[in-house]
Image (cartoon, rainbow, N blue to C red):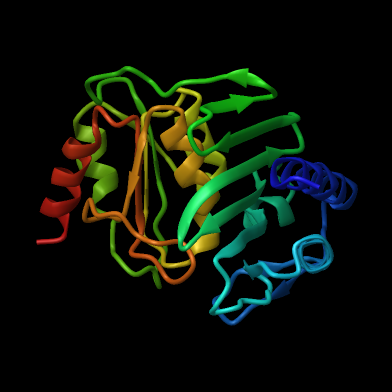
Length: 257
């Protein structure tokens, strides 16, 4: 099985698990970082772990709920079983399955699947980005006015970006937080959102986004504008249509003074 076929098949299987477990009053546990964990998270994580071990035994796996990272592996699958477990577990259908294949830390393939609206975003190095097999591109917007910006922030995040809500709003953009970086960032690739700012360190949140947004013409860096590898901890993420990347870097820089 080729990596593309493998990733897309897993995305659909994960989507089935997400839909079949979605209900009000969902049972959940709480992890040490005060985020919820559901049976669906664990089931999808197990699905991916077993599939990688079976089809690509020489590859490593980094996943939110546990993986099999191999330090000597050239290829590593990076997975977030459900990005957006908070809304998912509280009856809000805003989440997604995220899976990337990275080579020496660089994403070369990525898939994000929204199982509720059946939107599958896919990208492969040098092949562009598609949504349900149709090519998509980032927004051509050159200013923030009337644009939509995703901004994630939480008390224990690596960087405190709470002040950015006001700064970005004052420049005319609308700021949202869906509690899922994957959900809002995938919409950067389709041109519906102009940027997303994320202050975390976990690579599974951004690895697939990196290639999906950049193959659609956008730009993804750490919050300082630098490239980073996605087989270990990262320094946040700035995800934009490319045109506005430097402007957002300036906004972030001012906020961190």
